[in-house]
Image 1 (cartoon, rainbow, N blue to C red):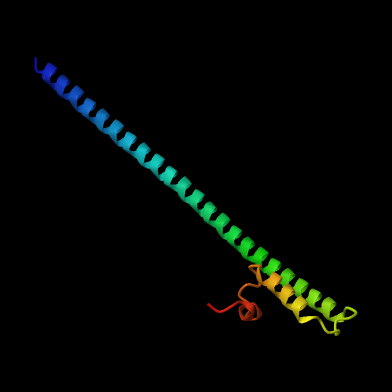
Image 2: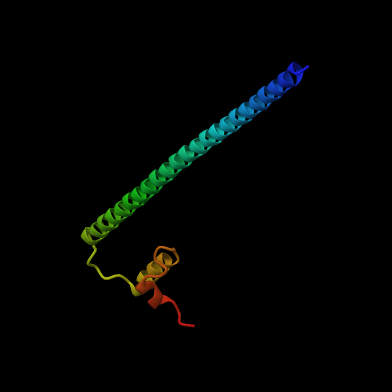
Length: 122
């Protein structure tokens, strides 16, 4: 008779130990899975940040290249106009003003000093 309660206590102890082991194993697996997911997320964010930085650098570089090309074109155009035959000939003031007004309608020239002088004062 004494043997049955000892056996029952041993089985209960083994069952408690088994449940505790399974619980700790599951918790450990969940923790590792969570850490792995966090690590993947951080790597993804780091990659996205690097891509964004590369895009920003590329955009700034492209903008600088376009600006330099525009400056070069402006200088080339000015030299061609000044060196063209008849560049020193007088121009009818009405034709000059019409040409300036047409340029001043463009956004690129609208705020230039010369265009502001042509605009009527309110």
